[in-house]
Image (cartoon, rainbow, N blue to C red; front, top):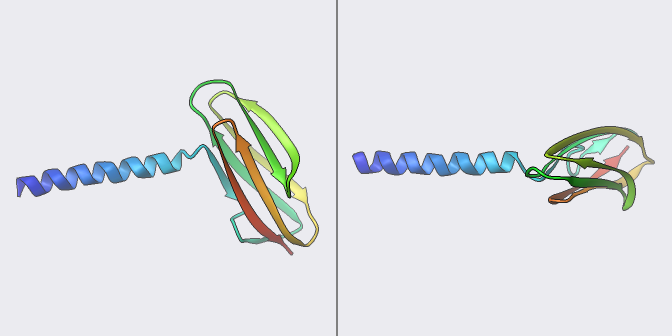
Length: 106
């Protein structure tokens, strides 16, 4: 009984550790959601978190650079952009990671 309790406790610690590290991904695009349909004035939101130091981040719509910034630990960006109907992509590249989504504008 005691061994199974210790094993269950260790297992839960590893599970929580994995959740915490997933929550602090180097780049996390919160919106638009990959594969989502949005209106032509779409909103975007993303964060980048790097371990203490001077970093940069750049974001691209359909392969075209539309913004950049400098950060120390973390940066949150929210922007609105007008796009024509069709499929589009958003890519965020920071010094410590990247993320990308594809979405459809109605």
